[in-house]
Image 1 (cartoon, rainbow, N blue to C red):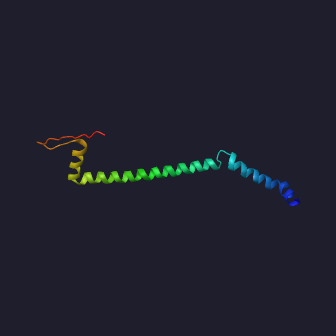
Image 2: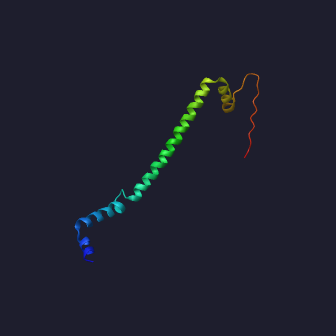
Image 3: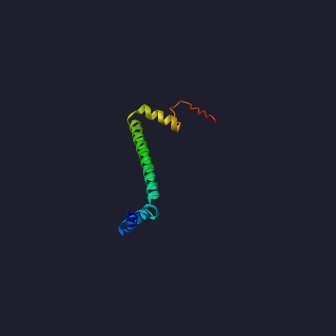
Length: 96
Protein backbone atom coordinates (compact mmCIF):
# COMPACT_ATOMS: atom_id res chain seq x y z
CA UNK A 1 0.00 0.00 0.00
CA UNK A 2 2.84 2.32 0.84
CA UNK A 3 4.51 1.61 -2.54
CA UNK A 4 1.29 2.49 -4.38
CA UNK A 5 1.07 5.79 -2.50
CA UNK A 6 4.72 6.55 -3.26
CA UNK A 7 4.14 5.84 -6.96
CA UNK A 8 1.06 8.07 -6.99
CA UNK A 9 3.03 10.86 -5.32
CA UNK A 10 5.74 10.74 -8.00
CA UNK A 11 5.15 13.96 -9.94
CA UNK A 12 7.17 12.81 -12.96
CA UNK A 13 5.13 9.65 -13.40
CA UNK A 14 1.87 11.57 -13.06
CA UNK A 15 3.09 14.11 -15.61
CA UNK A 16 4.10 11.44 -18.11
CA UNK A 17 0.81 9.57 -17.71
CA UNK A 18 -1.22 12.77 -18.03
CA UNK A 19 0.73 13.79 -21.14
CA UNK A 20 0.28 10.34 -22.70
CA UNK A 21 -3.47 10.43 -22.05
CA UNK A 22 -3.73 13.97 -23.45
CA UNK A 23 -1.78 13.16 -26.62
CA UNK A 24 -3.63 9.87 -27.14
CA UNK A 25 -7.20 11.09 -26.71
CA UNK A 26 -7.61 14.86 -26.53
CA UNK A 27 -5.06 16.34 -28.93
CA UNK A 28 -6.04 17.23 -32.51
CA UNK A 29 -3.62 14.51 -33.69
CA UNK A 30 -5.05 11.80 -31.45
CA UNK A 31 -5.15 8.09 -32.20
CA UNK A 32 -8.44 8.16 -34.12
CA UNK A 33 -7.23 11.05 -36.31
CA UNK A 34 -4.04 9.14 -37.08
CA UNK A 35 -6.04 6.03 -38.01
CA UNK A 36 -8.31 8.09 -40.29
CA UNK A 37 -5.30 9.63 -42.00
CA UNK A 38 -3.71 6.22 -42.40
CA UNK A 39 -6.88 4.88 -44.05
CA UNK A 40 -7.01 7.91 -46.33
CA UNK A 41 -3.38 7.36 -47.38
CA UNK A 42 -4.11 3.70 -48.19
CA UNK A 43 -7.14 4.71 -50.25
CA UNK A 44 -5.16 7.35 -52.16
CA UNK A 45 -2.34 4.89 -52.84
CA UNK A 46 -4.86 2.39 -54.23
CA UNK A 47 -6.30 5.12 -56.48
CA UNK A 48 -2.80 6.08 -57.60
CA UNK A 49 -2.03 2.46 -58.49
CA UNK A 50 -5.30 2.18 -60.42
CA UNK A 51 -4.60 5.34 -62.43
CA UNK A 52 -0.99 4.35 -63.12
CA UNK A 53 -2.24 1.03 -64.50
CA UNK A 54 -4.87 2.84 -66.59
CA UNK A 55 -2.20 5.17 -67.97
CA UNK A 56 -0.02 2.20 -68.87
CA UNK A 57 -2.92 0.46 -70.63
CA UNK A 58 -3.84 3.61 -72.56
CA UNK A 59 -0.25 4.20 -73.63
CA UNK A 60 -0.10 0.64 -74.97
CA UNK A 61 -3.36 1.19 -76.88
CA UNK A 62 -2.08 4.47 -78.33
CA UNK A 63 1.16 2.81 -79.37
CA UNK A 64 -0.77 -0.01 -81.02
CA UNK A 65 -3.01 2.45 -82.88
CA UNK A 66 0.01 4.42 -84.08
CA UNK A 67 1.89 1.39 -85.34
CA UNK A 68 -0.78 -1.04 -86.62
CA UNK A 69 -3.06 0.18 -89.41
CA UNK A 70 -5.52 -2.70 -88.98
CA UNK A 71 -6.12 -1.88 -85.33
CA UNK A 72 -6.52 1.80 -86.26
CA UNK A 73 -9.12 0.88 -88.88
CA UNK A 74 -10.96 -1.36 -86.41
CA UNK A 75 -10.95 1.41 -83.78
CA UNK A 76 -12.27 3.98 -86.28
CA UNK A 77 -15.02 1.65 -87.45
CA UNK A 78 -16.17 0.69 -83.96
CA UNK A 79 -15.99 4.05 -82.23
CA UNK A 80 -16.55 6.62 -84.96
CA UNK A 81 -18.69 4.56 -87.36
CA UNK A 82 -16.32 5.31 -90.21
CA UNK A 83 -16.62 3.31 -93.40
CA UNK A 84 -14.94 2.71 -96.69
CA UNK A 85 -16.34 3.99 -99.95
CA UNK A 86 -19.27 1.99 -101.33
CA UNK A 87 -19.98 0.50 -97.91
CA UNK A 88 -23.09 0.77 -95.79
CA UNK A 89 -22.94 0.72 -92.01
CA UNK A 90 -25.85 -0.56 -89.97
CA UNK A 91 -25.88 0.21 -86.27
CA UNK A 92 -27.84 -2.21 -84.14
CA UNK A 93 -28.81 -0.83 -80.76
CA UNK A 94 -29.97 -3.24 -78.10
CA UNK A 95 -32.24 -1.88 -75.42
CA UNK A 96 -31.73 -2.94 -71.84
